[in-house]
Image 1 (cartoon, rainbow, N blue to C red):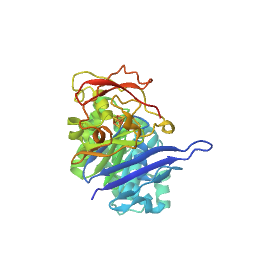
Image 2 (cartoon, helix red, strand yellow; image 1 turned 180 degrees about the vertical axis):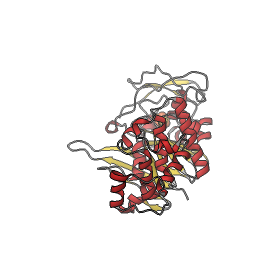
Image 3 (spheres, rainbow, N blue to C red; image 1 turned 90 degrees about the vertical axis):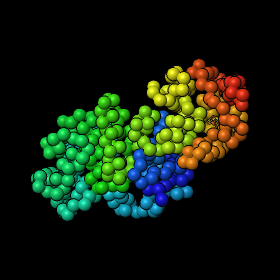
Image 4 (cartoon, rainbow, N blue to C red; image 1 turned 45 degrees about the horizontal axis):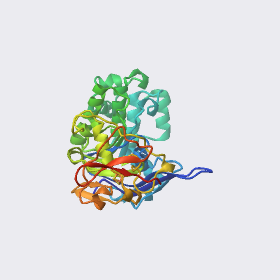
Length: 375
Ligand code: SF4
């Protein structure tokens, strides 16, 4: 049984006086126990909305799904009180912007200790009056179990001098240290799943590598599963066991990380890989995907990628089929159901995308011009 099992997720934001916005359209996500699952895509692809739907943190959105199970139980059948317990106890979250996610007027130790008292395994009063007294008058005693656990968690996430750092405020720490504090905070309730939303985006590459190593180690040593949201395939390559590629609110491909990098199937995935400096490009050339993703209200019928896809053909205006490439590897593309041989994608950075004229590779492997119809 998957730890998290979501089928056919649709998330719609009602808009006053305008058409509703369907941000996520038919997404399946499965996170297995003890794995890091990457959710990758450009900004606006719906990956963060998908992640926040797991925490039920989408105010005003209409969330529908054929299945939305966490540990085999329907998350959307839970009361708000039950969800408050699940957030923190069972599912922790690490946000991209640690400066706004952390409380600037509380020490980081206090913030972690608070999570430990509410969601962790310590025998210490977490009643409202005790909390207010700690928060605004006395602070948590350094001999209290929750404070000792906070220091321990800072050490666990690789913070040097954790006892001293616990007494500092967020603005006194570097960006990398603050991200580690947020990971320690997410671990405070001993969760089974951590959702990490672009946790390294604002960091330089060396600090990023350290944080990713930390996530990998936590997953391996503490048996925590991680749903890692990223726009960076390099991060996926270094960190994830499996990956879902999203584009414009839909899933394009799901695979183990090895399958995705060794045998990418979807034209969009192939395009993304060609823009990764190492490991992706097959012929040493780096190109970007011409054009940009459509607005949610302006998606074409059928495949949302078809206005940018060099392999688009008539069938791409029809609803996307799912094709199983291999065990654990699936893609959604008409090439696999409509053609005997999907061929290679002929990427041309100068393709006349606006005019809708691109190149498709025919069964002989030779690129030939084809026209992409609008709509
Ligand atoms: Fe989409 Fe068609 Fe391109 Fe496949 S070939 S990615 S279905 S536009």
